[in-house]
Image (cartoon, rainbow, N blue to C red; front, side):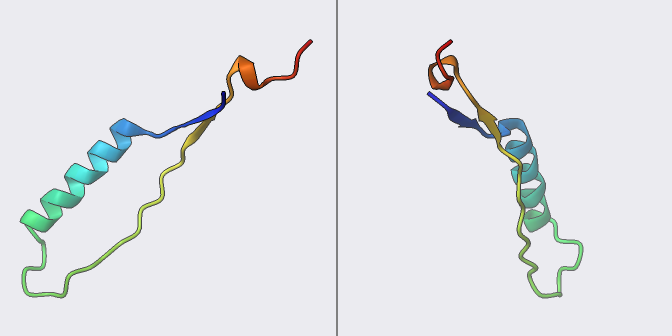
Length: 53
């Protein structure tokens, strides 16, 4: 069975950073800025997915 591993530690770190930016904005009177974040998942190929020898 092949699966995809998501970078949980990086997701948590970025979520905390974004939340802190919302709580303490650097430009309190400016418009809210949305940003997209793309994280690289890792494909985990298990033995059950490999060709038989």
